[in-house]
Length: 198
Image 1 (cartoon, rainbow, N blue to C red):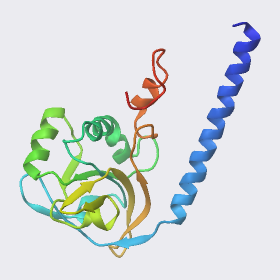
Image 2: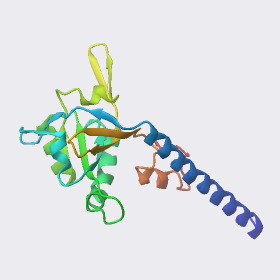
Image 3: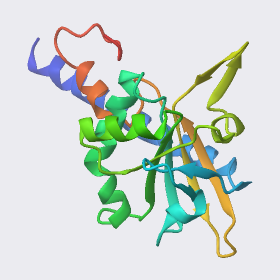
Image 4: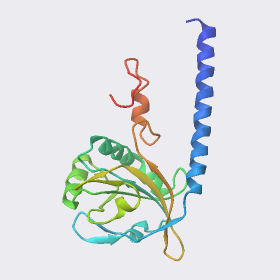
């Protein structure tokens, strides 16, 4: 490949990155238009078995990133959470931008969550939404006969001055999304098949 071809490919790549960034901004704007729905103040369970209201978990924050996790049975959900563990404190501190509380929920039992979080070294707040309708109400649980299949996703919440909790945005979590940088490394390796899943 000569220098001219190399330069042409680099320009093509830059154009694609610009298109992707613009598309991400457009998608975020559309997601915001869907938001503002009031949601109930779910009672969730800590690792020690005590309960806490979702509203209480905001603490000093008025905004929250709420992640729905499929639990430790899903190795990919655990991989995403490993990534969140590396930067959630920057989100909560506002060091690099806006401040928001980070909270992860799953339908695992509290004792399962506690053991798994300790094993993987997770430091963020994690609660069980088991025996609540949170996952089903917001589209992260699908009934199939007598079984329930849970899906991963992210919600952007706000607690208003009167204590109302509102959902402003929702997105699914899946291989290749912008929330997990590792997959973007995988697909660029020389022997990659080009798939986020290998």
